[in-house]
Amino acid sequence: MSALVGFDLDRTVVYSAAALMLEGPDEAAPSLVVTEVYQGLPLSFMTRTAERALAALAETSVVVPVTTRTVAQFQRIRLPLPTTGWAVTTNGAVVLHDGEPDEAWTATLRDEMAATSAPLPEVEHRLAAALPEGSVLRTRRAEDLFVYAIVERSELPDSAVEAFAAELAELGWRVSVQGRKLYAVPVPIRKERALAAVAERVGATRTIAAGDSLLDREMLAWADVAIRPAHGELHAVGWTAANLVVTQAKGVLAGEELVQLAAAAAAEVPSRA
Image (cartoon, rainbow, N blue to C red):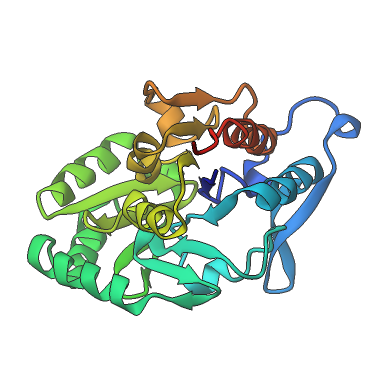
């Protein structure tokens, strides 16, 4: 029997201080561990209980981080996972095995993007021109494959995001807002495609996926069991599916709960006859 568990990272398994959503008195807060350091300061966290549960899950299942982060951004994350194994970065454009990228996978996606999606410079131009003045603080390319912007959310109404998303959809691109980042990603770059490739390579007989954003939607729909936290883009739009479980908790405690839910789902993998 073999279960594969694909986890989105930010606001699913790891949380910035601003995304913890801790309620109640400070003395009742869970014990946290640092999962990321940036420029010498702690940036992301998970609960100690979640860390232990994730380590236990990795002993019985193939656990695959699946993130929109670039390879360099992903390498800052410290999770209790084996040093060898699989990861998916750059929203599915990069598949890592034992830390090494599958160049053929990314090259195939680039060819598909060239045939179906508008060029990256055109999207960068539209990003600078279409959104309200003062809403975009700076923009960054991710592996020269897609673009994301650091935004001032108070200057960026939902209606502007929706209009921009509709504009880019006609160009073969998708838009997602996660915290203070707005992502514009070509349609061929999708997490579930990369995770499905990993599942095939490891011979998984059951797939479990967790995520919180619109960019995770297809990955959750693809999996045998889908889990999302009670926060984030998918929660805001009320996204649901027959295979979906939603956490009771939100914030960093939802991250803890969904690891436990994934472990329970992985334990249900049937033995092969």
